[in-house]
Image (cartoon, rainbow, N blue to C red; front, side, top):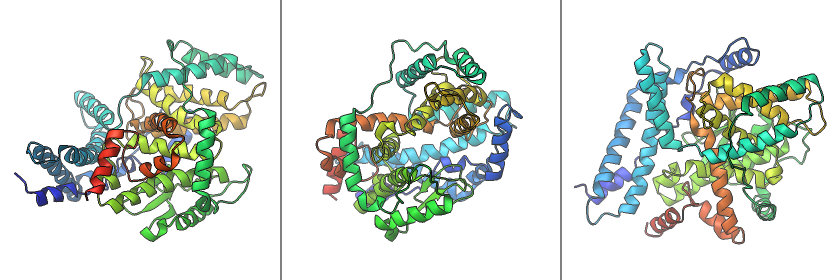
Length: 466
């Protein structure tokens, strides 16, 4: 039996390992593969994953063993009559998530090992899928079918103004017209009155921080250097610079990444944002991801710094919802981006009964996005087409990164948590819309599932007895 002091050491076990940072090819290679894919030179992209080589490093293997030992000892301690099982469970499951992320990346490495025979490949596919599901949950099929029902309705009412537009409608109807959505309909996540209350509250709460963003329209875009400068001003305005947080340009990143390991908000070199886009980025990355981590640090409880077992979709969804709230609510154009992440995941996994590879998903998705972005009685322009294909590729890359893109139904499922978390947070705010001060106080205790009343009370209890 371990002593209380020994168990306290296990509870403080740290891990800064992130799964998504391992699923990156070089920026140059990504661009080459993207262009070859969009221009139909290649059926699917071919990515290399140089960071997989680091998985054999002794330091990482030691970290994995340390986490595994901590999980085992904490679980064993729950058998003792004087153990606080709820508290121990919180710590053990949080550490288990960190362990599973290492195992997920190792499964991805094995998945991409071309030297493995076919039977081994099937085992690795199953292992990769199982770990994804364990970390990020199952896809919510009713959500997916409800969104597809909306897109089918949009398709049916689309009035082509050219041969190109007519061909897009005809082909998309072939691709998704037969999807049986049953009686599912896309739900309204948060009514307009509630969203207006949340909009007013968030703009007042973050007024000083968002004041650093220039007051410009959607016709003005800021490049990566300008975005970095503005975000660093926001970090200073929010007092987070005192903890060493900085924004920086990162040539290796395909998308924005906030990393606790070195206190950085990393922007890809091709970043371009309007003032609205910067406001959303600052709220999501700085005021949700960074703020919750730093607030968690003040509690001294490791799960509130790294995240409890069920926090991932909740935190991403919170970032998405608050980013919408400071601007135009669900009228914000990027709401479709969150929905399209879910469409991508559902199509790839085969929520309609047909698992797909990257090309099959892309051919559906760019047509959906084209129709989303073409107004009533407007024609499909070359600019709309180009943007739709680039956006579709970004979603597809997000889903299939870490895999071989030709594998049907094999994806990194983290992209689906944004919509699922958005729905859970919307429900949370429905219940707390007239008590937002208290709701935000609970939300920003640290990285945990604030939509779960049981976990919220447990976290508060742990802090009060610390």
